[in-house]
Length: 145
Image (tube, rainbow, N blue to C red):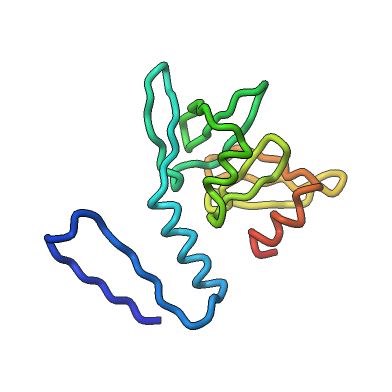
């Protein structure tokens, strides 16, 4: 694989171009990482509006009709419903793991089988997430198992 880097002060923002003849897993992974770095989501923390970069998100969760964004050390709320978030983050390292949770596999430290066909994921910050058995197949595909 060749890497070309070109710096010029005339550019207002970075532009990344990926050229390939065959879409391999490595190419897909590179594209997913680039998408994560370029995307943000609107959130609210302590009554203040803010944006969160998707690369910092560990998972999204819906609780009692409210959606939350979990980062390494923060929990923020968002007005977006999980199905809308899922549309926004399509073709990234996020995967739905239950009816109420979308997980960023880039922030996953380990995964192990759990009870009744479920899996238990441990995030980089130590949190445990249960992968529901109905979502295990899509999780395995995304995670590369």
